[in-house]
Image (cartoon, rainbow, N blue to C red; front, side):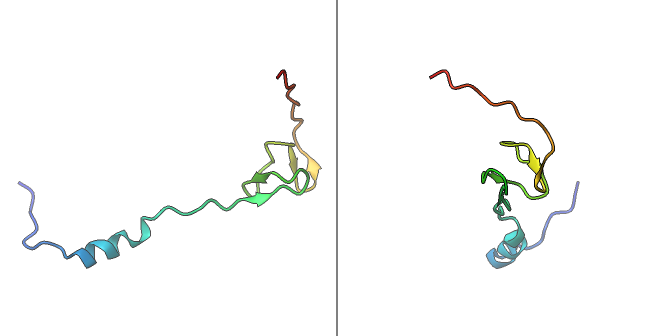
Length: 65
């Protein structure tokens, strides 16, 4: 059998342990070319630009509606 705790941990001790478990908001920046929001240091999925130049060619979608 595994050892069991002798005493109950207090609510304060439990909450101090969980102090770093909160979710953090993603750090997003605006694309310098098209203005859409993207993660930093990544190619923009909307226009394909990175650091002011086109890295990948993105196909334009046709609106059928």
